[in-house]
Length: 116
Length: 113
Image (cartoon, rainbow over all chains, first blue to last red; front, side, top):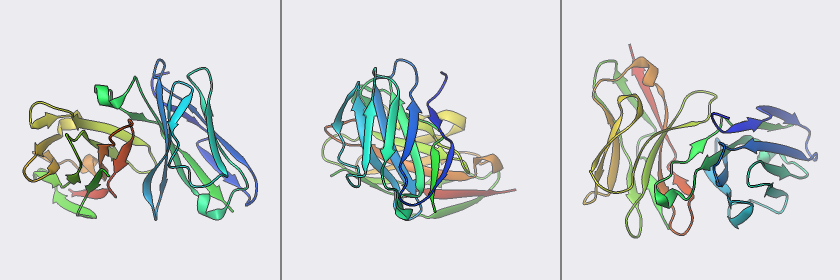
């Protein structure tokens, strides 16, 4: 597609339920990133994929959070047993290759998660 | 650790006037610096980046940024502000080791007619 695509755009879930957020990166982009944006914490890095591998998952806040990437393309961020503090906008981004090589990181529109 | 600071929560400017949104950085080694803009209820849009080369970087929508090594700054500028420039602006630095960004807390730009 033309840009990074995320779904769902909005999700309201009950506390304790599991949620899955999907990201389709720009075609051909090997690097994929997940960030979280919340009022109190600003923009936080969650995880970085290069191909299907995740060399940096240091930002995942707890073991309730996991992510995978298959076929070097689509990625899914899963939050188990959601808590109210998980309410945030989850942003996915991708780049053609390493940003250190001068590649720009492009962001999607985000998935707005509300835990009630 | 790499970090950026945006000292202003909000910047107010009248349409037609020049605007500056400030950013300072703290990195070990050469910095890779970025500016992104976020409109209400939208994702982040890339504006410009500094990797190496000219200290004045030109980007999208008439924005530019000046890299100043001695002052460790990367301020965003535009010669003539538009009401439609009103948005949240983020400065970011690329982390050493991996291709991940660390963002500042953001600066809200309000351009009045």
